[in-house]
Structures are given as C-alpha cells and as structure tokens.
Length: 309
Image 1 (cartoon, one colour):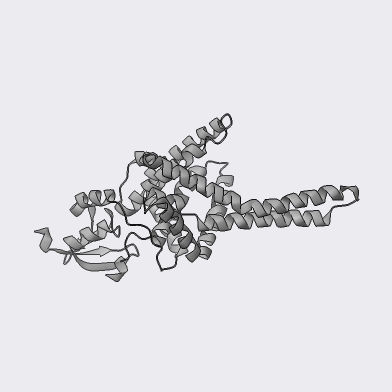
Image 2: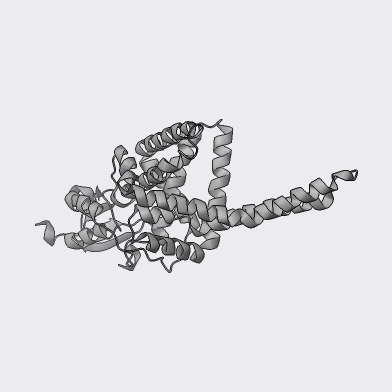
C-alpha cells in the first residue's frame, strides 16, 4: 500500500523536495543522498517522520554496498557549508563521536608511549584508526547510524590504510626538503658569521626564509593529499585511483581546502591550548566531521543531487 503513496522530504539545505514514491526514496538512500534521519512526510499530512521508520531495511543494505570510483565534483567546495554541516553532524551524534574520539586519542597516546621504546610504533595504528573513524563518521552522515566499534573497521583494510599513511608521510617529508636545505645553509652562514660582533643578519634572513618555505610546502602538500585516507577507507577504487582523485580534488579546490585547513588548525590550537589539552577530545571528532562533510561535497557518491530533483 505504501507503494502508492508519495512523500516530501527535507534536503540537507533545509529545503523541501518532492513528491517521491517509496522506490524513489529508496534510490536516494542507495545513492547516499538521504539517510535514516532525513525528515519526510506523506503528501497531505502535516507530520514529519524520520525516513528510517519506513525503509530502515533498505538503509542497512545501502550502507553495505560498495561505492563507485571517486571522481571529483565539478562544483567548488563550499567551505562555510562544510564547517556548518560538520558542526551539525557532531552535535547530532555527540555521544558516539566524542566516545570514538576518546578511543582514538587513548590508543594513539599509548602507541606514542610505546614509540619511546619502539620508534615509529604510532604509524602502525594511525592509518587504520583514522580510517575507522572516517568510516564511522561517514556512516553517521550517510545513514544516520553507526556503532562505536566501527572505529576499528579500518583494521579490515589494514594494509592499504597503512600504505596510504606512509605515502602521505613520504610526500610531506619530500615537500619540506627544499626548506630543510635552506635552513641548513642558514645554519652554516650563521656559524661562519660568529667571528664578527653583532647578529648575523644574512644568516637570520636565510633561516627565516627556510622556515617559511618549509611551512608553505607542508600546507601545499597537505591540501593536495588531504583526502587520501578518506578515499582508501571509503574504498573508492584502487589505491592508485585514490591517489589520483585526492590530487585532482585538492587541486580543483585548493584555496578553499587551504583556508579550511588553516581555520581548523587555528581553532584546534586555541581549544587545546586554552583547555590544557582536554579540548583534544572535542577537536578530534569535530575536525573529522568537518573533513568528512568536505569530502562528501568534493567526492559525491552519485552525480545527481537532491537539488536537481
């Protein structure tokens, strides 16, 4: 009987869309354009209900379906929307997000302590844990439901997530080599100038230039590869596909992503500093939610959007 009913739904932009049949609603779920928390109402009714009350089984099946290889959207990233949507996602799922963030922080802290004895220990859990947190957040964003243990799902794809983390680290290290060379030159100039009284202006200038070059290089590299782990965790094609897609997506949205990277960095530093480190439990889930929302804008799961209905 439901098959003959039509419904309206509220999109992520707060606007109403419709009418939709049950089959069309199921399609929006399978394409990741609606989830269990999406509000719908039958045409002619005044009462809104979560979509999950009608097609919860379809939502569970959609969550398990593999996605197509990632192709960057031709629509530019709306940085303000990513920030606001990320904040909204965190507020709506505060308990599980904070809990997952605490687990992430705790494991990374222990791995860091072990790293004092076994150098590099953190790297072996960072990729899978980050990937698991991304998977959990994507589930909440796309389907409105997730389990706290989903943070460990990254270990099912351990090898590729470890490789993606190592690749990111190698790229970032390679990007700062020119800056390191300039810094070394600055140190040599400073050392050779110690025989003369007063500060070595040339040496100081070279050191500052090296530091700035290193910082700029790191920001550029981070911007161009910021979705590497997201794509691998989301299983959007092969490792090569993910590497290519994150570069293309980063290049197409460079300034917006750079701005978002700087904003998140400043806010995170202030929150953690002002709370003597306790704010880390907020910063981890908040930043993850914001980056996931930016990721969903740049790499949509389907070329059709709700707005085009």
